[in-house]
Each structure stands twice: as C-alpha cells, then as structure tokens.
Length: 249
Image (tube, rainbow, N blue to C red; front, side, top):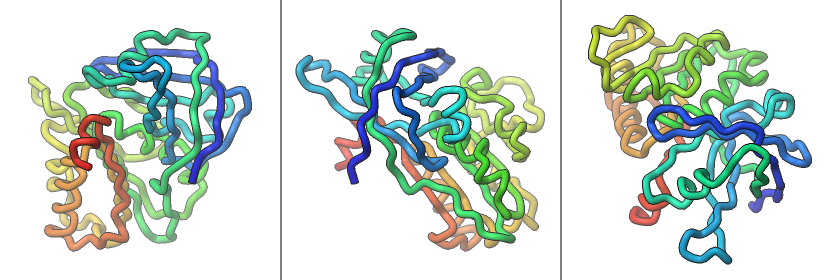
C-alpha cells in the first residue's frame, strides 16, 4: 500500500561515531504513524540526476514526541551508497521528500507477557520509538528489557534513553578493551541472551529483533533451539544496505 507524500524541512543533523547520522525534520503537515514503523526517503540517483530512488528508514521517536520535537531518523552511511552521498549535501534548513508510513514491526500488548527489545546498530531506531512511546508506557505488559549491540560505546546513538523509559538495558559491545561493568557486556547480543538467568520467562516474552539479517538469524536460531520460543513470539525486521538487498533478491 502506497504511503502519502510529504515535504519536510531539516532542523538538525548530527554525526556520531561509526558513520551514523541522526536527521531530525519537521514536515509541512504533521502526520501519524505507529511506533516501530518506517518511511521512505527520496534520494537523488547519483548516476542520473533526473531520477531518484527511495530508501526505507525507521522513525527513532514515537509519533507523540515527533509532533512536538521533530521527526527523527538514525541512518547508517554506507560507503558508496546513494544515501551517503545525499546526506553529505544536506544542511539544516534544506527540504526533503518522503512517503509515510509503512511496516508491521509494531508492539503487541498482551497482559502478563514480557517484551525484549533486541537491536544492533541503526536497528535500535524503531526499538527506541517503541521504548519511548505512550503505547508501551500505558500497556499492560509484565516487564520490558533491552539488549543493544554496538562495536564501541561511542557508537551508541541514544545512551540512557531506554533506561530513562524504565527498561532494563544491557549494551553488548564487541570492541571493548577494559573489563566492562554492567550495563556493558563484552560480546554480541546473543552472548547476553545466553547469560540471562535460568528462570527468565522465555515462553512468556515477545522478542522484537532489529538489525542485520545475520544477527536476526543468529538470535532466532538461539531462541528457538535453546528455549523453544515460537515464531509468533518473534517480531523481526532486517536492516540491510540497498546493495546487499539487491544481491540477495
């Protein structure tokens, strides 16, 4: 189903370590979406200036905050990518074109069940949208935890945000040279999952997994083979570079 077209003005661009950029904008007409969903951004085609391509990016703020503070995207700048070249031309005050909104990566709120938010890299964007939303704060879920994976501490785009939302959070860092202390864990998100207490309610938890396809497959294999988690309790969305998606198609 096609989304509606919008024009929006950039209000902030912030670079962080790991070739990631946070882009905040305000559309001419504020619109709604569900936490976890994404938009399509119009990007000029490097090879043909008369043409454009559309790239999907998840919102990193829930709609109620976006309407007040500005809508926000967390984008990985992929070397040689169309979006990377486009972002490097943009500045505050510029206008962008987008279509919204899409996606089924949305929160279920079933009483008595827990929520585990598992993400790596820019895959934390839709998880943050869910974590900060009124939807999860007003839900009847039993508990919420987050396991977020990055290479280094400086690559974490939103340190402290999940914790301030009342979500018990662990950061899995693959490149850490000193002995880490909680909430920092040396290793991958699956390593953190393997260290959870034996009485963790695996079968009474819904797992929201977002990041690279390889990470998602690894997490799903572990949940299903080690703990018998059903498909219906795993909600996953892969973040893949456009070039990789074409090769896989």
